[in-house]
Length: 109
Length: 219
Image (cartoon, rainbow over all chains, first blue to last red; front, side, top):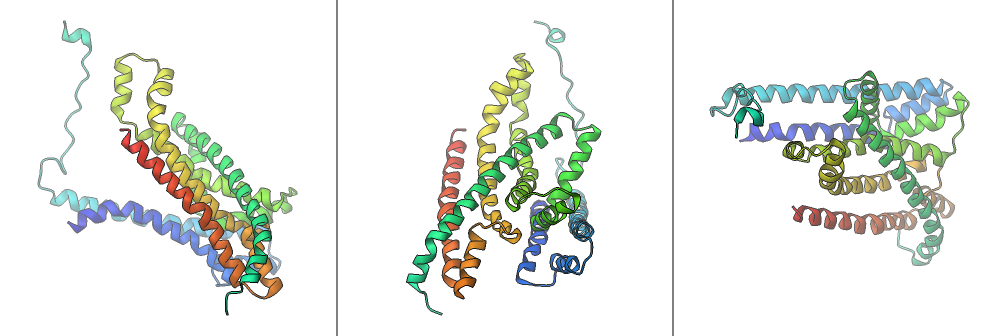
């Protein structure tokens, strides 16, 4: 049961993890030495504002992207696991050929 | 530290004044977010394969994956070096609006996608023109859930305006800090701010929930 539940949970877990990562920027307000706080200090030492904050943004983006890619990877891994263990005909098999849409004329009256 | 009622009572009027700025920022940011989100969702839907949509998609992804606080700093502190000066409130509202615009776009898209495919097929089978399909079939079903979702985003933005205190916007959070540092007592103003936020967001969230329940009963 758990592997199946995990697969469904993963996408929202990933989103939450990225949200959490972004919210860590707020800890700089209570002077914790995170990326944001360090960026502010660098700016005060006379580095170019655009460069420092731009770099910080890129770092956050890269971190979030890593989380996202890891989550996608896990999802695929677990998805394969599920397909492999699924026994019913509804799972892990190729979709049936799509039904051709028949026009009214072909059907006749 | 004990609770000082007289002091708490004295800090209410200035805090209420500042709270108006908070509400104002929320309203402005909501307008930006709702309009921008709509445009983004349209671009994504109508031109999903064009280069422009690809670039817009990358932009929204970047905004979604970086902290709003950092974006606020970036716009507020970098724009003077580019020779363009925004007031703190304008910069803050813009960033909040754009940040949440990328989220509201997703809600618009999800709301339209949530209309069952069969509705499109049925409209096509009855040879209802595309415009009519949108206006008379799809949107009436898509709009109520979208409204509920956007209501939630407005609530989140309302809380997000606290970030504007970091770039010198005198909204309710920075006002409470100011009062606290003037009197060397932070307890009362800070608690009051919490109560103000709760007093607005709790009833609003109840309203959104009632609305959600009403529309889900309609089906």
